[in-house]
Length: 287
Image (cartoon, rainbow, N blue to C red; front, side, top):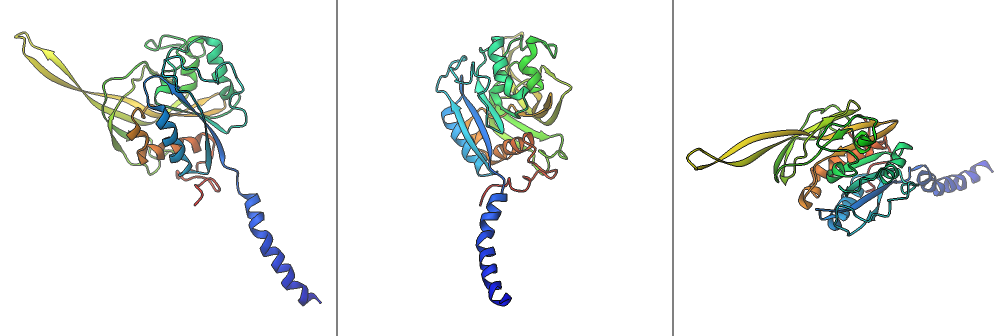
């Protein structure tokens, strides 16, 4: 009797095994990507980012996008402090330099203050400037709201020239195994100040050329090297925040080296990246 039941028991067990494994597999991270505003090809970049991130990790990217190309883009998150409800992480990739009224900025920050991790790309560093970005602002003041969240204050950038990126913390989970590289023509954002809560991961170096007239009226070309932190992490209260200022042009955003960095930033911010820079169990991309 026992022998006759064994094959049936095994058959049921094998049939149930895939369903049990599926039930145990982690759900994909829900990623909210916010794009729109001045100066960038967000209509294409949002799709480049979605495809590149979903190919690299177990996550699903959902968009909040506007085609408004002004410095005050009409993003539907404004006035809705619960805009990130149900998401595991928010990627700010908007360019909203003239959205600066404090209640609006407080609303954008609300999910992050409540613990939802943040990732910030390129022009997100020049958004929500409630204080003069060119003057170091005091942490904890209304003038430093967005800078406190980012962990770094930037006010502008130089010309588009190649940026040589060097990882200064190669032992960090994000930097582990990533190779230094040089971008195509890109913008190097300056560093007005780096807050104590921030930890630099990579620096960028750019050769800037300028014309200079001599006393005889003759023009010469001068070159100087400019350097700044281009990728870093920040602790915002109890919230993890990753940022990189690189990512102006579509070809840079589509570069595998850039997408690898941003993917690691997303996984680190959500505590799904192990010490060796690999996704934790269940968060590698589905094959």
